[in-house]
Image 1 (cartoon, one colour):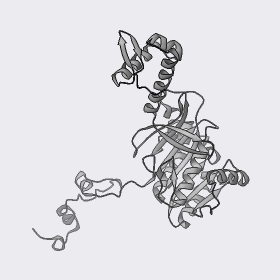
Image 2: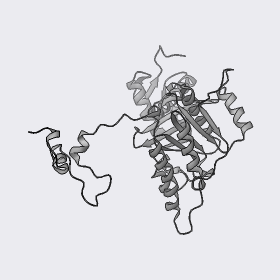
Image 3: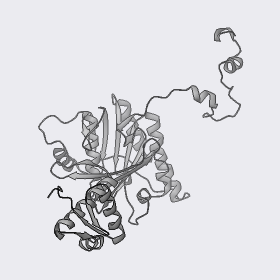
Length: 335
């Protein structure tokens, strides 16, 4: 079999190498399965490991829940090579944070709370309090910043509503959302930087929290990653789904003394821990054997759910079953 240098015809050389000749009129993205098998791609570039990869990310939450504090904390962590969400270390790089709902005075006060020490603030963090609409020079402003930055890693637009344009007269709301979201997605792909657009949640709730992002599915359909912060009975839960991330459902806590968020753990486990703590308190208040009905009356939880929880707690050894339907705390239970 001849080597590559002995095959002079380009089509024959492609066939020899296992490549198909480009068909006339074929789209640019056409590739054979055999060629794809031999291709190697760089690993996913994470801004916040397991949560925010390079690409276009939408994050939504109700007003005043603290999403801007989270975005500022992430921006500072990336620009300084520090930590966010408690223990997530960020690779250092250049960051553009568009705090478009803040004045410079207010932004300085926020920075003082997130960075309480007296050291210098990160020079790799560029702050904008004004920006042109995306379709009126905003995209060009972002791209020019990325071109000048030595190592651009993250761009935050807080909020997306500040830079979006009204839909055109001849297009639907879906088409308008898809066009403007697609512009950010395209820019992110072109410059290889993570772009996060902060969006509000709509007032109407939904079974799937990710369906509460304000706007049509034209906007969410463009995003590589969707994150939603939602306040629940047990606290704030961050839900996430995307093309490059595992599905996220984590409990978070806002540390008011330093105005930063930290992860408490998987939301299901945190909820279970909270439920068990409530049950322990009900046992201690009773001071003796209790039934599922007693616990339900004391805690206000639904009786069927309490029955299942007590069964699981007994199986785990957290409580003891004395007779049919009656439970007590183990003698070594913490007081």
